[in-house]
Length: 78
Image (cartoon, rainbow, N blue to C red; front, side):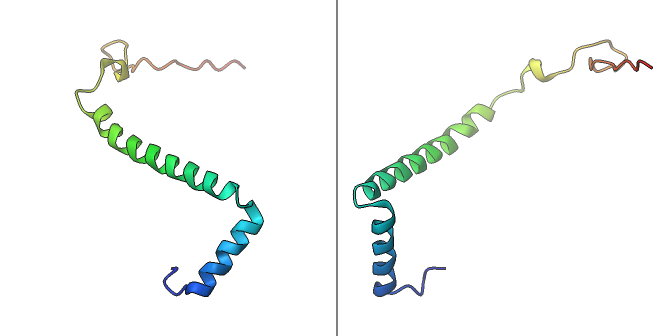
């Protein structure tokens, strides 16, 4: 996608970024993007650990043995 960018095009993009955000904000934006990527990667590593193990009983429906499922029944008032 960006394979055809030369030095001139990159320099123009950097100049536009400096004019738009200011020289002080660019390092702050880069740092916040880096922190976001780090948090995202850490979240991906932690997710499989939560899914391991047997399923909990809390997700099973409670109710009678007739297969009612424990779901609330709606009453139609007319």
